[in-house]
Image (cartoon, rainbow, N blue to C red; front, side):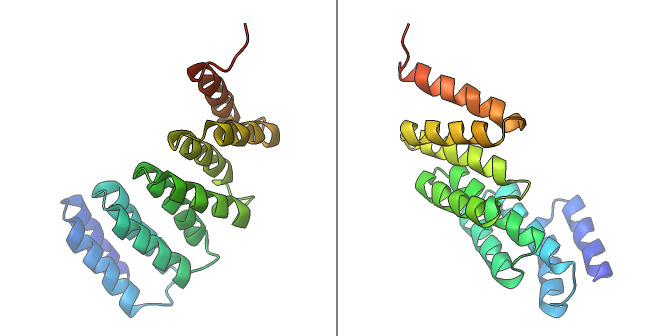
Length: 168
């Protein structure tokens, strides 16, 4: 495993991502019980999403990770990542659904507050400002000390101002 990981890193250093992923896939196929497999699978998904912007393939990798390595920290991160990918790819209702599921499944996960904020942004981008404001307000109420609460408060004001829902 170590040798293949090192070879993959060399490929990545030379921007030969497909060759690096092939090394990772060999590890996943040959050493299925290795504790490094969830990390490797997550790295593959991130390469598809962040390096190549191949969102359907990234989602497929995340879904496989969740299925193969459920309840691992990597599977939880992959669940969040799917929601973020849907948002990035302007699939706002899918983002709302995935992020809602993430928050319900992993309410204490470090990414849960970010998922709530991103869910509100998804509502906003989809034209559902009422639901967005409701979600932002809930985030502020439940996590007032989190930095995301300040962002949520700003977004509430922005939404009201942009829709002129204020009284002078």
